[in-house]
Image (cartoon, rainbow, N blue to C red; front, top):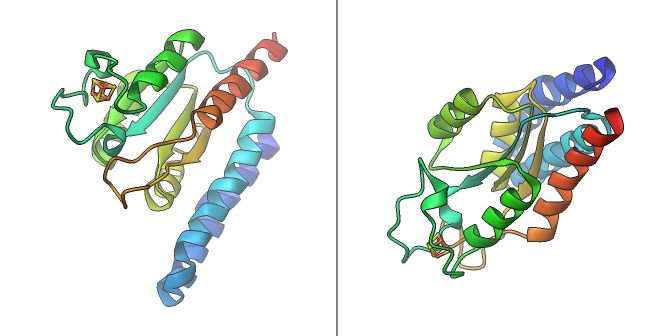
Length: 181
Ligand code: SF4
């Protein structure tokens, strides 16, 4: 990542984000809008300027797994039987096709452990506005492309994601890798 992008991300994540969260404490209805704004700003910087990531990780929230599926995926997402009842199947296929790491985290502590263990050069993370914005800030300076989940049944339950956005994000990072050679 270029030095100026690194610096700009630092300004966005370490200065603008806490300032907007401070404002959000008084303007509660705007808080998730501020979080989305930070994610968008961060994404545009990461997508244009992340070069040569050799290890890419797709990091998913636990709530994307179908609530009726009793397979424990937190420490091994490849235990998924690919039945197709949730998007884990498709996300595994995206990871396999592109040769990138993939993992599920049940919360911030596990997410931090996954990042510490895998030590990715870049991350494609899926989550809600709150978890995504705080996760992007926590993992700085690692470049993260954040993709908001979809919540047709409400928050934290049988959530889903636009697969094309995930695939585009992975391909964008891989393209940057190829261009840098
Ligand atoms: S696709 Fe995988 S994780 Fe989703 S319900 Fe089927 S077996 Fe469970």
